[in-house]
Image: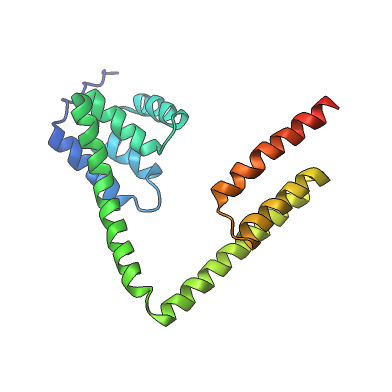
Length: 184
């Protein structure tokens, strides 16, 4: 069995183009494509190195593939390599996002589109409520927790208090209730 010869270190241009390819091909999630581009296509890492790095990336906050781009970029070209890799990964999705947001801003003025968006929002709200009800059946929460759920629903859903303000108000009350209950 022969040992694998390490591939020559890629240039920053190759680093940018590799992550640009990954960002352009991976709408909806980069998971399966990341290994293909990094290990099979570009041969920047072997499977063991990839598994070790992606495991570390999953433990860090943020998107796994963004973390991986920064780590590989840093390993290859220092801080500028990290920026080049991350820029390559994000440029196509960000351009697509700007284009979609611009089109949405223009189209959302049309009455038919507004009705379609309202319908989609109602469907999404129904899915969230249905999921919450299914989860509530199996969680068997007590009446105090149920009261906090109801308070949050009334504050955010009925009174239209912003979610951050609702949480800022209810979180200390909920923690105080738990502490009070524990001390009894």
